[in-house]
Image 1: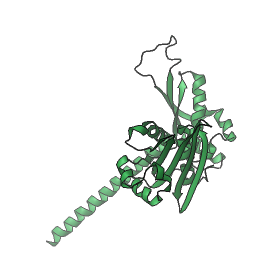
Image 2: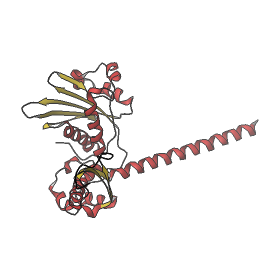
Image 3: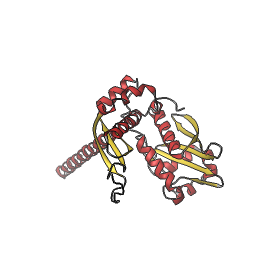
Image 4: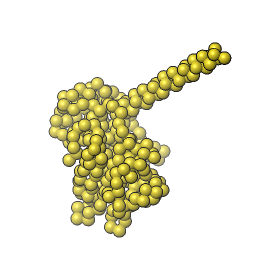
Length: 282
């Protein structure tokens, strides 16, 4: 009986060890894959000519430097101009995706005037060296999942962007695109979860962070980011305010007169800048 018990314990120990090794291997491969995509960016170009490709490389270089570091403050930084002028030197691979794939070619030039997604992979060591020269460090540790709650107000329309309501389809897609651009993972609440938390658009900014954190946690969210976008007719853009509770401090930042696409990029980018230790957005 004792022999059987010892054998059983030995088998259990082996199974546990194998499971831990497999879990660690899976985590390592996931982390590696995530790290690799940090050095990838994409932009829209017209045709596949070299001139537009070089312009695209420069745009993607800035995006990747921000994405890898989490430092939104590098956006439009004049120090990047020298690197942008030779952006091709930092590229390890690139490819195109035809946005009009499957549609007939209507122009006599064929593909010259068609819009393409230019997808660019950069050499990680070269990008890290550029960041080092800018006195900014790569943010290569695990990034927390953002639980994002956004209120939209335009005239009499007022709603929260959710994962399932059709009225926020455009904003949901834009938020996901902004998260991809900034190297962040986000989760959005659904209508039922908001109702359960008794939170609506009018009360979102005054809803306790702990309540929103509980809603976000149901979907894997670890840090709550709350935004409010109100349309301003005089500026023909959105007046935006963001808040995020992190390390016992409430961080707030604002911007005005922007599209909601830009507002989302600045909101998620601002959160990344705080979480990466690169300072306060503003």
